Image 1 (tube, rainbow, N blue to C red):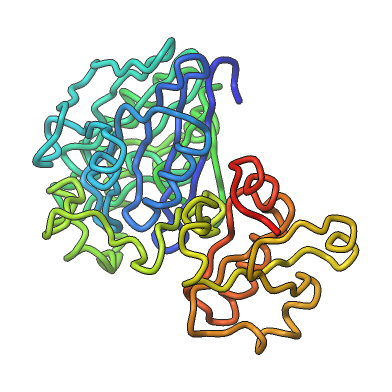
Image 2 (cartoon, rainbow, N blue to C red):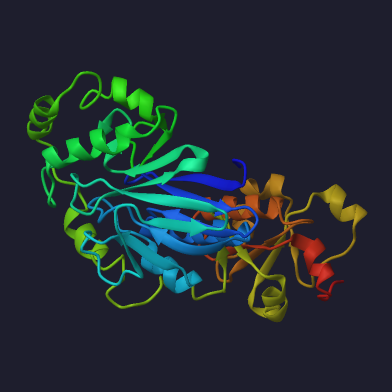
Length: 355
């Protein structure tokens, strides 16, 4: 948490993409920068768990290496989709131009047009917090490539030197990608140390470097660009299918949770696995009808006792160890497994039947 800002930096391993969540503490108004399609459940769960209100997803450009999650989040949470007026992206709720501002609560992002990687690249400045989100225009010790999708090394040199490098040296740079685990840099660092454009490099040096990189095209290029020109909208206009066996919710930590009310209404169709320790069970005699006791510390050795012909709902006192049991079962290949949210405590709070 930074002053009045809630900030999260989220990563997609397969594409090396950073997604940034910015939320105003008081109003809970939230922006998500560069969401990833495959991380939709993660991002939605985080927003819901933190009780935030997503105003908009802001894409810094039309990506070529991953599909945006903007459309999925819009149709799941009612948020809007923002991107550059020059991005070519259809279905935008707002087309952003150089100098535009995006307000969320008491906070404000200022838009910088920084073309060069693509025509529609933008960077986003949060001046009060000394932060700048540079998309693919400026990376940590690098920059976006300029050899396809309207790329221009000359334009990118101008964008970085006349826009980004005029920001104060202590502004923290948060890039759109990193592939070796670096999380942030600063304007001052990149001005002096970036091997492509820092130090005494002039436009000729930079253009010569960029034109001789000879990189292979991104693996998802043929899929990502057409999809992103539709803001990540699936061809069938539908959200990803939820599991048909139960109305589970994927938490931010990746665990499948299920509401106690739903479990209580479907007990005859489920296998409820109580993973409390033997000592706990002796001290607290409350049970859910039909629940089978296998302590979590014994579960790995007793997996064969858990039937495979019914969905398994794991349970403990508070819902913490049952998430571990859920993980153990899923790691063993069981797909229809969920943790009962809140455990036995919540079950009793909701007045559900016990023995």
